[in-house]
Image (cartoon, rainbow, N blue to C red; front, side, top):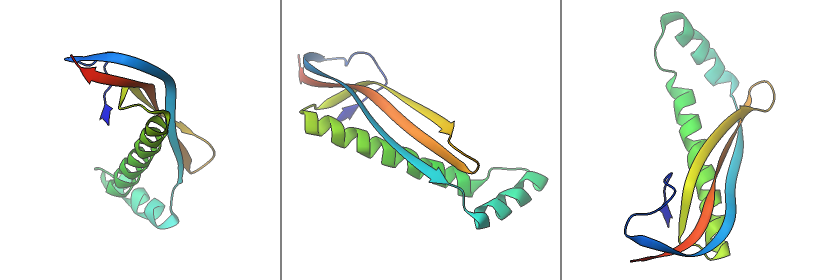
Length: 106
């Protein structure tokens, strides 16, 4: 599966469009991570626990979007975008979406 944020794909032509596909996940913070994060805010620096959690959430959302595109018959997803929003205290939703298409090399 080709996944890109571009509107087109160099060296390929679009044969068929399947429309919007998406994947999402909602993650909650963990009390233990919150304590470590609180300490990090005092001394500064990257909060690696949250960085890892958000990276895993993005990967899961992409996997879900890719599965939806494959089920539709697509072999590429164009115009991919990410969005993150708070749902309620301590939780965040990661959404990834794009246009599912079938392409061939030109």
